[in-house]
Amino acid sequence: MIALALAAALGAPLDSQLVLERYAARLLALEPPKAMIFTYSVSQAGPRNIEQTHRIYRSGDLVRDETLTSEGQPVRPKVTRIAHYRDRYSLDTIAPRTTQYALLFMRAVRSGNSYDYVYRAEPLGVTGAFVVEGVTIDGRSYLPSSVRFHSSNGGVSGSGTIDFGRAGKHWMATAASVEASVEGKPARERITFSGYVFPGSLPKSTFQAPKPLPTPALPTF
Image (cartoon, rainbow, N blue to C red):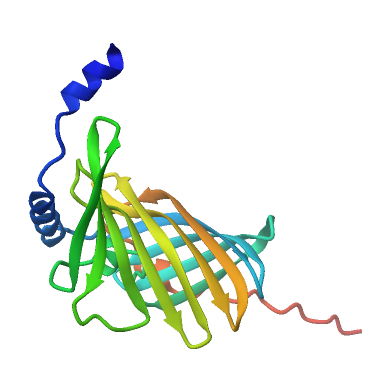
């Protein structure tokens, strides 16, 4: 009886074109965070095995990357890298636009008290190393809950999924996974993102390279 009542309250899925209109509008209205701090863990198996945890401080394209653990062991002192690069996992970078892809409706999938909407993506002249193959649109936010992709670069090619979800008032990457071939050898990678904090700004000192430890002087006799 309860299941029937919930099904009745849920109602029918929205028209797939209306979902796309809301999706396009939400993407246009996106406001990326001015600054953020978060942690990510990466597990990689294949020609090179990696188990690491990092803390990231980002302001625009400025990044402070601190390696906290490696192979399950704390890194002391922390390895810190200051760099300048675009956020590869931002929704603005990953989400397929209807001007770039034809999004073809596949099915509606019940998710809690609403529906998610699954689309196949057909490129409209899109070329490059990263091509979207499909997107699942969250039926509450009308933003992607997952993006399916194929990527190739030289001897590396693979397919994977990037998942998104709400973090505060923003919609952020929560996980990424890929199955790949590296020079003909199988490889896989999974990244999880957590602990998002969105300060209004970060001090300039955040992006200054740490001073090297002093070299101990040999005693003279």
